Image (tube, rainbow, N blue to C red):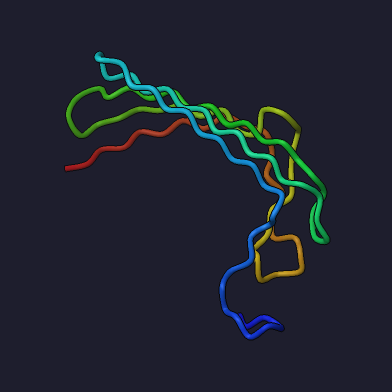
Length: 102
């Protein structure tokens, strides 16, 4: 997308705060937390978002994880930087995932 000033650099909301924390134990357990704040702009209302993740490496190449999503509010809106419309509403939830890599 090309902007009024002629640039094609993707615009990022100037009032965004992101913080991520990861910790790995010697026993193959991984803990993670991600916080994000987005100030109100012309497309979306302000929101705070917190996601937590716990994963366990069962054996080499196989990991099981549980993630708790959007813990600070029941939902929030998200969209693409080049779109003026809402693309999705992200709900609170829990996800489990098993990954095997060979």
